[in-house]
Image (tube, rainbow, N blue to C red; front, side, top):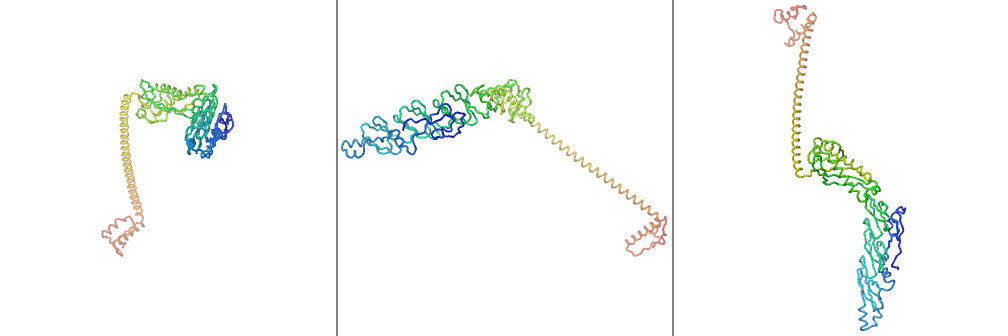
Length: 504
């Protein structure tokens, strides 16, 4: 087998329709899943099989010859004395899991596990190595094992070679193995060869002969000395945090601002032409800091504490509702309003600057603010807390007075309802009494009118007699005209009717 294998690659342009995963190098999936461009990539398949490793190694290193033994055991049996001692000294045992190397006539030979007899005066034992080592180098012989998921880089006669996973053996002094590298790394560079992985959520900026090339997510293999790989640009939303950024309020008071800016790169080509591939975060940060200083320069400390707004010339949006400097707002929602205006004004100030770069500002929000002077901040916070407590006490007093007033009003309303009830009851009672008297008077009048009729008088007298008799439980009643009852009866019906003497 030849020490040098032929290149098993094929060019793969970025615009090729060959699907990812197609094997392009001797059936290897690693090379097949990479998009290739420019010159073919010198991928090399392993030339040692795992199931016949010793045979393949012997075939390459020993050029298909023997294993270093130069005579047979029958010769050893026929020899005696000094010759036998010489032969015994030249016998070498190679254990399992080891390889031996010897020099025969100036050429390195491989000794596989077993007994070997170096009977030739020109044969000498060189070294014993562990067969499990990933790299074995003895004289011009190099044995390399490349793990799965990795590639090996080497130079052979000054030309780069990319060794695919497996066992490789070379028998030439011009072969120089470099190292193995994991394909999980985003960029592997070896001379003019670049193995590049662009992950989802970003693009990779490259330059080929001075021209910008933007690589979308995928895996690439490039073999060109003029191809340079630059920075990675994220196309997802990014958050830029401002920690303890110092601004000066109107009045010369320094304030530390904690904020969060959210932005997104919409046009990568515009960003590269206008700003470059590595300056986007720093540029957005610098512009935002400048706008923060401009906006807060028109804000008074009292406006932040009380939440009074909107500030003239200031607008904005905010999501955070915590109190600034520990002081609560005077009215619900006022503090959110002032911070809302500040944040929106920052966004409106940054957006016209970043738009020509292809960068869109999504949102800015203030997380917290704090006075830069620690002593002043402590005194101010203490006084603000005292004011807040006083206001809270005042509000509690007002609420208590309101509760007592409402209770008094409720009690007065109850008494008023009770008095009204008694008045209505008295009126109803009086009306009922008057109606009763009216009915009685009407009854008397009706009775008087009935007594004027002769039949009515007789009927009434008869009724009185019957009632009187019933009360006495008598069967008959005789009333004498000279008695008290007779006189009373005679005095009543004088207007007419039968004579009392006739009543029995």
